[in-house]
Image (tube, rainbow, N blue to C red; front, side):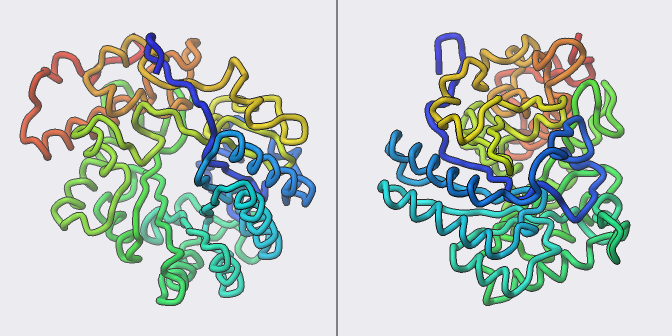
Length: 400
């Protein structure tokens, strides 16, 4: 951390790899296909072999230069399972061998909509010990409201909940359960909070992640205004139910808030905290992107102008536009907020808009404040040291 409160990355230890640039679902809130960015249209559907081989080489190069003991590779998309078992097998083998040859080790994760999980695919994932995260938005009514099939086939326009739950039964079976990484749920205040949590918990996931739909001040989330916190209210109700039922399933967002409140560090989600995410995104043609959540901001907002054929990962670290985090990067409203050490200003993409670039509080400021205050009160009984009613941005226009 610099004297002016800015933190800058010194190495990447997480690589999000877009093995496939298309998806077989048409989720209406998708930040890849439904928001500002259109660059996916120009990319190859499946990452070509030449790109995969060069990427494995670049990752190993980075591991060697920085003496990294362990790196994490996240297979992503689009829908990464559309790349097929052979591509996944070859790529994971190439990365592991390349990294181990320079003294490091690689672990793998995969984020999927679940509709293409099968026994043969899981056999490949077992071979590389790939942890599988599945997107599920609750029960059939909640999930199918947004997550329908794409294209002109039999599943086009139809909800995907039945196929996802079938895949989760397979993933949760004794043979495959060790690969189950968790569930990712996008919050929709229209879905009953407790019922949504219970629908997720039914599958006995090792963890649940709640994701706020990507939005900006120019394109705010559904139901948002400057005086209410519908997403925060929803999360608070889930938190109360989660706590009253014994916290049987870890919820990363809630666990991160509790940990940050108690210790000041240790966030398990990019939505909170001050530390920079040591992650880089590699698109299917080899383009290097800071973070794909910036697709919610503007066309090609996250693009670095670099690619793996002409640039190393160290080249990116030297760029002046390398994203920084820390209190020194935040607007004055955030810097003087009593909750800044917990929320960290929120996700960068969510701060964009209103003619001020990223120099705003999160568009979810009221929601994050509501959740943090609520959890603080639940774990400590009452806030001490600071009057939140005086200093919190609750009830204010955070752009004022």
